[in-house]
Length: 312
Ligand code: NDP
Image (cartoon, rainbow, N blue to C red; front, side):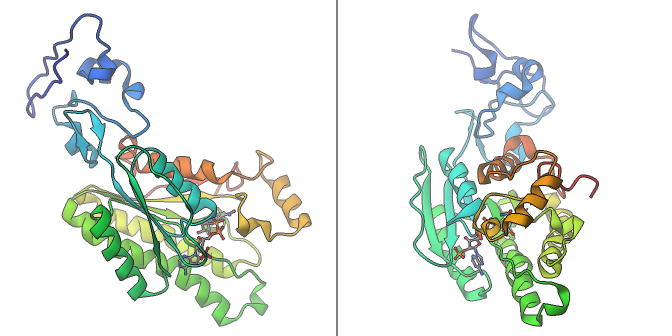
């Protein structure tokens, strides 16, 4: 058996490996040195101490079971997780054994199974209602503990040209996409501050930075998420809480199915990769931002847009 090295801060590590043992599996420091990437499993698994003197557990701001060398199942909340991108994100976390809560506003909740010790909880919640959000958090905390990873995904569009856009078209979109995200982020931050760790991930859009005709309301709401996430990154960073934005381009979901054939063609012509994204491609990036590997990324806007937003 290889002893998992448990050197205290500042002390040199003296790992003892039996001949033939895989240093990556044991998490010995030389494995970190030589095969840093392969040390991490799909869970953002981290085994053993860092060669920089502190246990990974503290450096990463992620709860890890150092003895077992794996990340513990985390409490994840995905808003609007009943379909589209949100469902793909919830499924991705559930597959890796996290405790996933998803909110749904209408219809029936999806049937998702979690792997390992994880579980999936569907909570009815309209994020424009402060009471709904409070009730949902109470239910989630009772079942899964405080939310450690929040994915603020729920969003709507009310597209029309500016002179036809009513105040209601504007405020409805802002209330859902921006104020709704603020509401859940603020509530999640309360628990994260106590835990001294957490990941806030906001689903914005390529148009938040580039703008888009007919989407004055939507683009304003998505741009607002960038300022909000970056302010949160400043406010909460000292407690190992990161705040990042994912900016998808056009994704194959109900939201884009509404677009006419001409508009779809126009969009595809402008996308260097000449295709829409699949929801799972957004989910993969969100999963990364929630992983141990992304512990030092905060205040970032990560485009997942096939190149559509280059230069913005
Ligand atoms: P969908 O329209 O397929 O799903 C939207 C989700 O948000 C649904 O689960 C919906 O619930 C939920 N939702 C809407 N309003 C509320 C509310 N008031 N309270 C709670 N939940 C609500 O959208 P997508 O999956 O395509 O989009 C997900 C996110 O990604 C959105 O923020 C969107 O702006 C963003 N995005 C999407 C792109 C795309 O091309 N599809 C591109 C860039 C960004 P319900 O089922 O009850 O309506």
